[in-house]
Amino acid sequence: MMHGKCRRVFITCTLESWSYNKQSHLPHGATLIGTILSSDKTNISMLSGGRIAHPLLIGLANIKMSTRLKLLSHLFMLTALLPVPNFIHPSRRMHSVLEDRLVHQCLDIVLSPLKQAARLGAMIPDFNGDMGYCFTPLASYICNTLEAAMLAAVGRKTSPLTMVMFKQFGDPFRHELRMRETTLAQLSVAKSKANPVDVEAFFREAQHFRLNGVHEPFWRNYLLACPSSFLTPEFLHYLHRKFWDRDAKWCINVVGAAEIDFCFLILQPIVGFQHFKGGITKLKQVTGRVHCDIQCYIVGIISGPSPTGFVTAICALMDFHYQVQAHQIDDGDTAVINDALSEFHTNKDVILQLGAQHGEGQKNPINNCVKGVISLYC
Image (cartoon, rainbow, N blue to C red):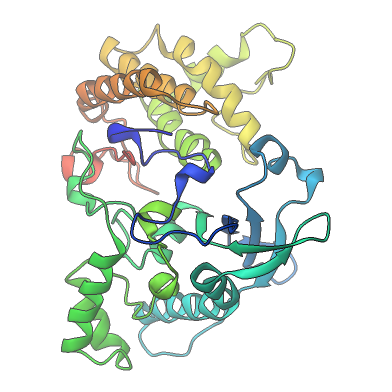
């Protein structure tokens, strides 16, 4: 388990990741069966109608991680297909609010048996056919950043794990955790000022607390389910995709597209690693494996043509990426992770000074620290 300010970065889904509090004890002979949920809105057809699916998968935290991650083990089962509707509300801004509400309502229905089992327990057979008295707390919900914010009932540019908003994303310390009691209390205040049936009025009141307009989150009556605990980031979105969408783009903007492509072109091919004979700036379908291979080369590639402070910041991020992927993290590892984060925050201003940070679809650099500062989930 991770401690200190890095605790919220990556949490292995083990029995220690969630537990019943000291006031409530399991009955004698009862067993905890941690539930892992995962959902991701996915395009299933690109040229024939643009069909979109939103599957909800379920797995168990009690299974060894190395076994659970193998695709052939089939340890994640399709539980439901969440609807992807088109709304006719005159305000297009309300379409996302209505869609978020619908997802929470569907999760409320689908997960109702698990909620009951988490509160009262259920008799479940094991592989021998023997019945066991089991409780099913929500151990983890795996999703990308946007969906995590939706599930936590917070708006865009707001952390689903802490009380921080975009203006504080650059702070080098961890803010207060976003506890379920806090969010429910904020929703209660918003309900007292506006009827949730009036979507626009309720959304305006919810915005004062940086909430997204969902009035009944699915986890409100799920025993001990707190977004700051069950929203456990995973490597693909929070490391590799973040690297490709941000870190790699900074390097390209600082070094130059032609120069960085040439550096990757002349690298000696290594068995087990992809050789980028055409460079990396024109890659289109980039997988997680490609992200990993580029991360192995990137520090050496930028060391020559980049300023020392920029190289130090990127190297600190790569050290952070490498350290947090360990299966077990002790206090010594946590100290190393904290040092890497501190080194990055010490040198991150160089990224803005060099004009490496660009907004989505923008060619000009962002020099405003409020918009251009880098956020890490610490």
